[in-house]
Image 1 (cartoon, helix red, strand yellow):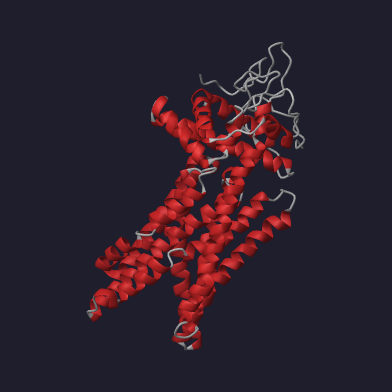
Image 2 (cartoon, one colour; image 1 turned 90 degrees about the vertical axis):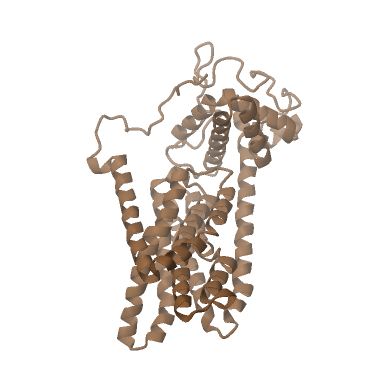
Length: 466
């Protein structure tokens, strides 16, 4: 049965009764952002169509969309441990495809023409524009999306994986629009020259941009995302680190982008040399880093949640189920089949996401990196878990029995500073807790024991309160 939270879910001071100004209202901000992106999209659509022609635009669109689902699926897979809201991903893709692409086309064209006029060297201006101007402008425009999410969706931006995902989706949108332009222009060139088949400019452009290097733009911008991810992991008092690390990531992204764009000037086989000796290893290294970070997140879930088991908020096996993507999927499938279909599976997925956020929050707190809202945020997350426990708890217990090997009591409790004696062999608390992990006296969701004594609304003493 769903219950209302017994504690406020709003930040201190938000209930003062003061009404925000009209420009501070959420619908005004959302409306302004949607209008900006829509106008940018219409302008970039008109500019690309004007340059490629209608037929070229349609051909470019059809070819450019091919790598998009694969790239988005890859970043969503990476984000499955603590999935961010879809609105952030939609914003990131729209910003990259519309706003960032528009900024890049206008700024690159203006700068290249100005340099060509000033130096009377159009060829040199094109080279300078591709190797210097374009990397600076494009990476800055894409980084703006990461910065906006970092500033205004701070609760959704908690680490390196979040930075990688937002940066990668933004770059995927940018590359999508850029590929329409390049492929559409190539098709127009083939129409004029009469070239067809694998020898055409369109085929060559498609092979280089879509087959060989669809990951190029995401690879560059992910470096910026990693910088913001490190900043998100830093304590609020580390102002220099929180400012300099994202800037360093952006400069590194610009440098890699410039090196890639300049590969065509390194001789006949310069492009292939840079691709094989630099781009592919860099892509492999960052892929390994992303996967390693994802596994570390799962390990953090397993290590941080047992304290909530000890306090009775979670079932004994839940840290291990939530620390395994296979077990999570098993729990969702079980809920879908036995507890009401897709709504039940969605409730379990939300439970998994909130529990993961709780583990990350406690991890930041233990390391002294929790914000001033640590207490309120922990309460909110515990309340969200309690609302979904009726469906989620049986599904997670089934997943534990079928997918997870539970440790002994000693292995379960000792690493977390709790005595192993007095607990059941499979991690169930023996004193003061029922068999399924609930406190025997009192209702944990209400924060009070049966005899009227306050039971701390947090599972253990919180040493991070400021």
